[in-house]
Length: 308
Picture 1: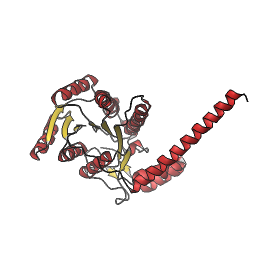
Picture 2: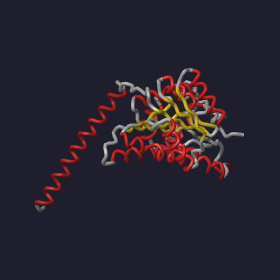
Picture 3: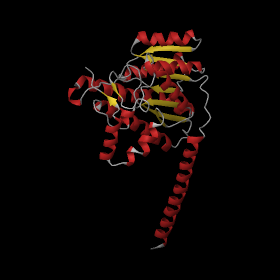
Picture 4: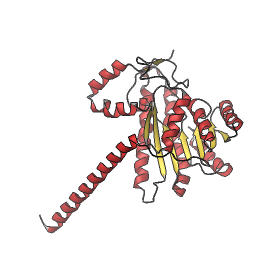
């Protein structure tokens, strides 16, 4: 080896060693955070925009953010439900605005962003929550259902990120919450296209985190949280199938909203609802061979039956 090759080898070895030490530090810090979570940050005075705010988890999150002193921008394609959410917040003396928008329409989303910025201010917390969940075998799902679901569950999230991320970058301040699902972590029958859309949400958020990290500007003030709920009682899942109800219970929207907002305020990167499922999946099912994981999935028998 010549001197140049020796120097390159030494540099790579030192870089590897430094990366290993930093990685060990981050692992230890993550383990400590499980036992001693970060202090909850305040959302008072923040502007929170929630898509799908007209019902379910979207409504419950809107109410809770308002109670914490945030200004809530309620967005939904359903004007009646959105109006109800806004009125509920105002009856509690909270600060809320309502906008009707089809988030599958990129032009409409960009128009919404300009309107909100002018009438309310810069959105500092974006909650990608709107979504649909057709429940039936893949061969029975229509082209229209699948296209609409992907437009809403995937493209709608991307349009919202493109619309509201720029102002967060300008200020190096913001938080994006995106709703994935346990169906975005493991395959579930009767939800084949839906699983694909929710796996996509996790991919979008993971890639966005890497993109923000690689940016030469300091964007450390922008945080991301991906949420993977199991079955939540919002009306999307009409026929839940649960063998062990104490382990895989149907979660009420208010309970889910509490968990999501608590995770966001502690800057958690990814959570499941219930929270312990995160560790069951990450450290058990992902370490098993596929066939073994399938056997355990069949034993627990949690999922959804096809809609009529």
